Image 1 (cartoon, rainbow, N blue to C red):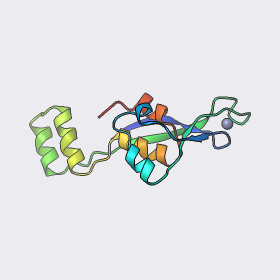
Image 2 (image 1 turned 30 degrees about the horizontal axis):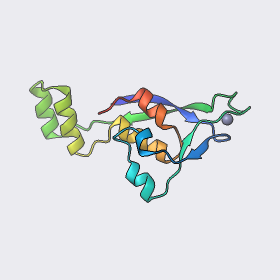
Image 3 (image 1 turned 45 degrees about the vertical axis):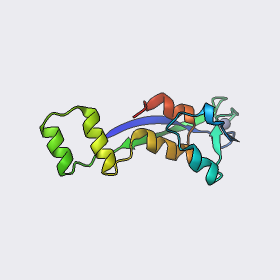
Image 4 (image 1 turned 135 degrees about the vertical axis):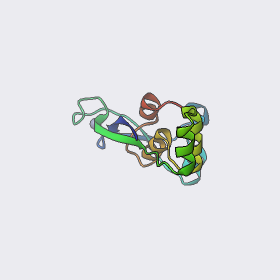
Length: 120
Ligand SMILES: [Zn+2]
């Protein structure tokens, strides 16, 4: 299991906005955001968060459940990327994907996910 911490947006001053396609990473679920009319938030800054726009942290997880295929690949000492691809096919959500879920639920910002989780 991998884990990264992102900063949690301050609920008192986070600002909703609709990013443009060119402003978001290619793997960001932009279509879902548009179709479901979900607001994405940017940090503001207020007295509660001492002007930072953030308050506390929240963890992103990437949980690899080793099924038979993955155990076999690991036993063969295959490249991490090959194992990761197999795990994603088996339904694993990556750090980035879990990060985007937290962006769409208003917990953190796009920049925070980009900062802690590299492209898969
Ligand atoms: Zn604030």
